[in-house]
Length: 200
Image 1 (cartoon, one colour):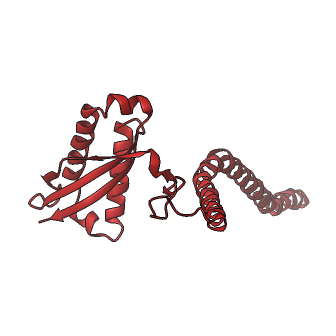
Image 2 (tube, rainbow, N blue to C red; image 1 turned 30 degrees about the vertical axis):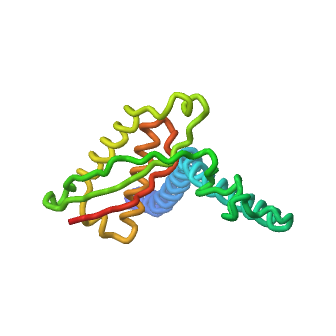
Image 3 (cartoon, one colour; image 1 turned 180 degrees about the vertical axis):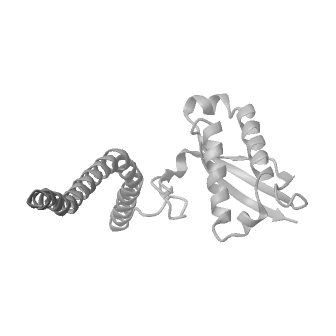
């Protein structure tokens, strides 16, 4: 009987130490998981966050420089053009120099949209293009202009009326058109101006 009691005592000691070992194991696993998660976050997501913040910082610097130039021009009395419009060669639209941009009119686009397909759209657009001296002498490539026009038409064929009805839907559409035009023109198209948009 004494042997049985002696045999039971180690089992009780083992049972008592088992929950402590489980808690220690869980704490170590939690610390390891946290460290791995932190490392993965720093290596994968930190570059994405930094690259997303870079355009915002550049835009803030550009706006500060534009404000300083405007204040400097106003102090010197050179804030106005010779034509009296009040815009110098440094005037910009989203950081673009007006003097370097040429406007190219596109033929009107008339098509039905994607959903609902019985709604028709008519758009009149123009492109603000930055053309270098060599391209200016040769003229704007008509094949590129037609490719941009066809791409815009294909985009409008996939548009949903619900997306255009949203408050920011129009701006999203213009942004999509600008990115498509820039892609087709190898960056020559800087802005897309919507002169008319009619849905019926």
